[in-house]
Image: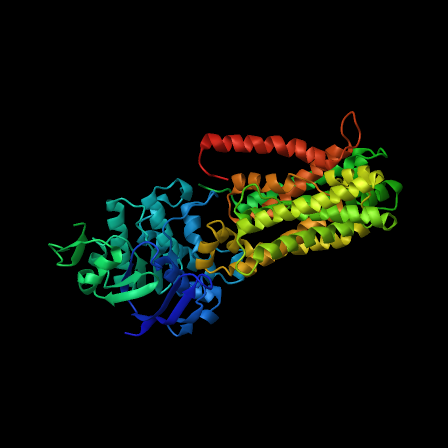
Amino acid sequence: MPSALTLRAVEFRWNKTGQRLGPITETISVGDFIGLIGPNGAGKSTLLRLIAAYLKPTQGDIDLFDHSLGVLSPAKRARLVAVVPQALSTHFDLSVSEVVELGRTAHLSFRHRLAPSSAEHRQAIHRAMKATGILEFQQRPFSALSGGEAQRVLLAMALAQETPILLLDEPTAHLDPGHARHFLDLVQNLAALQQKTILMAYHDLTTVGLYCDSLWLMHQGQLVMTGTPQTVLSAPLIREVYNTGFVQLQHPRSQKPMLLFP
Amino acid sequence: MRRPGLTALLGILLVLLGLSIVVGVLWGPTAIPPLQVVDTLLHPNQSINSVIVWQIRLPRVAAAALVGGALAIAGTVMQALLKNPLADPYIVGASAGAGLGAILAQDFFPALGLVGPSAFVGSVAAVGLSYGLARGRGRVQMLTLILAGYAVGIILSAVGTFLMLLNRENLSTIFAWEIGGIHGMTWGHLFMPALLIIIGSLAIWPFSPDMNAFLLGDEQAHHVGVAIERVQFLLLLAASLLTAAAVYLSGLIGFVGLVIPHVIRRLAGPQHRRLLPLSFLAGAIFLVIADTLAEHFPGIGTIPVGLITAFLGGPYFLYLLNRQNQRSLGGL
């Protein structure tokens, strides 16, 4: 498989003396679904922001497919990588479909900036809303949605960007187990059906192994371990990193690894 | 949330603007029968009445329309950039800079009549200073920009007040200017600022999708592909030029840039492709009417238009806030 994402000795310093992230060298193949785990403050969100070019590496390079991230224009970059944030609030009275439409920003030609309702855009917005099951409340105000609904809208916005790479930053952190499960199923299906390459920061070690193809473990700004969920979750290192013991189980149906509180 | 159609709203506002302009030129110190005014508007000729309508009354009404439109657009831009519903065109130091510019011109070169141009320069310079201070070394945080603008505003206001106290004889001139008003307008005086306002407004419009994206916060705007630093800079520049052009024509007219975007957002939703042209027209209508009222205030005569906008805008804004609280949902 060709690589969708290449990190070459990527390093980020918040300031001259303080903490530092990396250097990290790693690649992700097209279609991989990677879980990014690690304790609070390990640098997961920072790594995602580096890959989304919201932060600039102090050292090293990031490539998206054959493009060096440093020289990509914002619009071209946003057609390669989309981000689903943990949560988003707005004071403004945007409807659900208007939020999803914002995902089309990078696809607007100059002509469409004043008349953005071309068939192509409308179809992309419709597809994104259909895939996430939000068509029936597309006219409702975004600010009035429940957490689970809002998160699906944010996923739909990212899908409307039609990018091969999707970054998710703890997307289910505010969701109840039912909504979390449906959301993760949705993401997993997208990875399978649309060959999307996915990197998802995630906290729940009970479920992360059920969904991801492989895991990246971060600790104090370093990528300390990568591998299949089986390898990473059963490594002694993970107990050290989280500073706690875990009980490891196999899921009774899928035989996939899960970590529980001891 | 079904939004009314853009063309329909544009049509309605254009008709209202036309009506308000006609109403705006009906009255003046020289009494001309209304029918004759309308006739003169449609068929300009060489008569005295035609000259009065075309060379005295219309420039004034056109200036009011352009100032209202410019302030409404600048307010819309600032509210989107700062994601702050209390943002107005003056929020990042423009008013204090303009005030200081006006005072400097009035104090040091009273004979040159440079109050307007000097206010223009002061306004743009103050926004530039706030932006430069907020920029520091990294990305401009919009909250830092508000705070920097606030600090710059306080300092420049203090300097201005100090200068005013040193030259007390100028107090009333500057005071009247700071309330805002449109006086002695001619087409020649109007030409350059009008050009700037029209070009600036048209230049802002294609950035509508970017401004929509800013409503979700700067980081998400970045993720959907907005070149946030460049767009913020360009929009801030355009908005401050519009504000400065408005200040040049009329002094500091408050509340238009704050209230009009809110009203139009309630009517037509927060999408800037619709919001910007509708706000321009609504601001123009509002200020033409306010200026007409100010010029012929019943029982008093002429009062500064800034007072009228405050009288109308302030209570209306409180009413909006009150409704907002009752709905308890953040629908601005």
